[in-house]
Length: 199
Image (cartoon, rainbow, N blue to C red; front, side, top):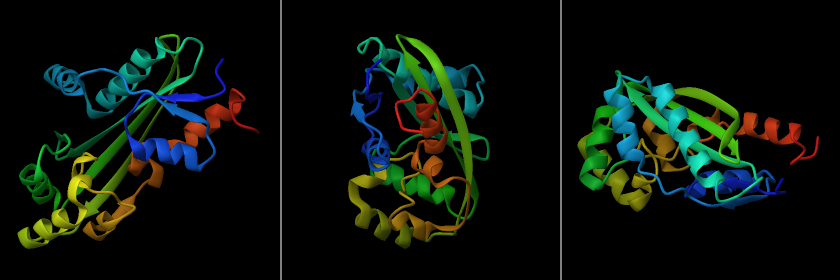
């Protein structure tokens, strides 16, 4: 087994999160069409939790074939409001529209993590957080998007809670790492159990 965890993701947030807590990590994003797979699962009526889990597993499984014997972590996050699944914004106008829909209400962030070895899942975790966004004027949304720039397209909710995005909320319930896109504490627990991290 490799002494490094392979992260099947291009997410700098997830990679930085793991590196900051002392996990030896190497990134190798998978080549998968997440949008197409998400649409297919939605068409079949799959619940949001299953979609997050399936996408996380697909990423880990796909990348694990390129790293025989290594532990490969795939992760995914979905945002749900009023039964509707949100995707990452394509441009500024799309981001403004999404924030207008989220403003003044509660939404859920569901983060899934799956670890595969040689194409087979060996571990998985799922966690959920609930966030209440305050009412936002169109002018505030425009100013906010101008300030954060391309970061609006990095996450499904067009915000990063660790930065200016914190100003959008009145209440947050759930694990901070889950909100950032990875149920980190269960991942660390598993890595200790397989002796990739010290006990």
